[in-house]
Image 1 (cartoon, rainbow, N blue to C red):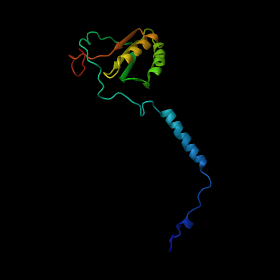
Image 2: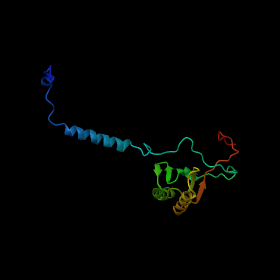
Image 3: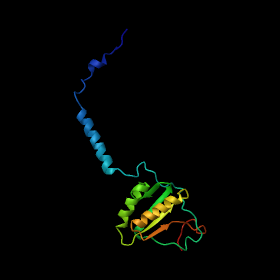
Length: 152
């Protein structure tokens, strides 16, 4: 019985002796690429399109602005989304201290979803006050406002 009818293995060039260094160079370049061009937002949880802040009658009348647009978003318990990416409650305290030192009288806007427990909101408020924030504002929508969000 003929197992190798064309004998192609004898026509091939011999395999190279050692290409381990090329593998290491490729792995190093990939690591460098992901380190330099990587982002905390890649495969990180974010705010969904259906994220809605709670509705509160008279929210428009009590609206205030925040300095330097320091905004954090919380969609569910224990996960806080900031400009740099998602943080847990332990990391939030350090982030607030760092941000609080950048402005003279910092204020914070908290956009929290309906699933966020009051205990988390209380922790965020107390951590912000410890970090030197003068004002902590909880975001809410006025139910009588136009759906387009236009300003008067």
